[in-house]
Image 1 (tube, rainbow, N blue to C red):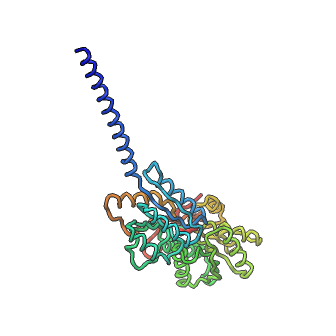
Image 2: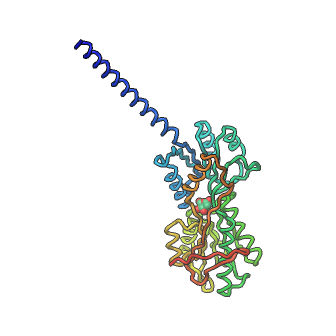
Image 3: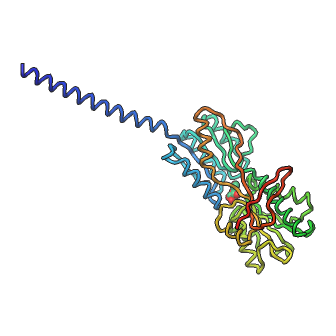
Length: 346
Ligand code: GYE
């Protein structure tokens, strides 16, 4: 009898032990698959690292699409070459990622690789610049800035400024340092300037690409200054170019500033991210900066979450932006019927 009791007790103990083991195993493996299931794999093809805007944009994406937020981010830097970006996209397709995020260098040449992503059933989100494809179903959506509006706002600011200073249209001689040719930011900002210049009869002395970099901005401005002696405004398509252009102006023994009537060369630019450029703005070396907001990480995160929930996001998602200036007289500018406030930076 006592033997039977002991045996039953042992068997019971063994059974409890086995059940306990099993349930731990089950619960461990179920949490594992759950967390695995929740992780979203995103392949992000960034075009390069040419400017402060770009590095801030990359950081924003890495912070938002982090492990802690449930993302497994595969980041690829395209080193300013579309061919590298296309290779990265093909690699993402092979790895069967859940989403592809593409910050394209230029607008054209994306059809084939986007068709491959679509055939693999991978949604593509475009950030910053755009892709020019006939079939818009090749990407889910786009998020970025209205670059032409940025250019129009800047041109409207130049118009207001020269008007209040009594500078006639025929006395306006603009040197134009463009961004990477064929990129949406360049195309839009260039259009904003050239259309306004045509409308008012401003002289665009010369236009050349500075590739959105400080070094090229400096080189291009130095060569402009060697060739032309009437430049009184420099329209740089980003802050890094503006910093380079100012170095060239100073190296040529001239002064960057808004006092055109007294021989200064007025510099305007885009972005508002580079802290040196913001300091130049306060000092008056740069007179106006059209903001371009690079913090697309959380925006992309929201778009992915929407798609995950089965919703269809808007095709084009624009970011609202302002103008920064240290010239206190101009508080508003107008583009068409819209009026925009200028942020006066002190
Ligand atoms: O203005 C410039 C960058 O495409 C908006 O690219 C972007 C531009 C930005 O390198 O600094």
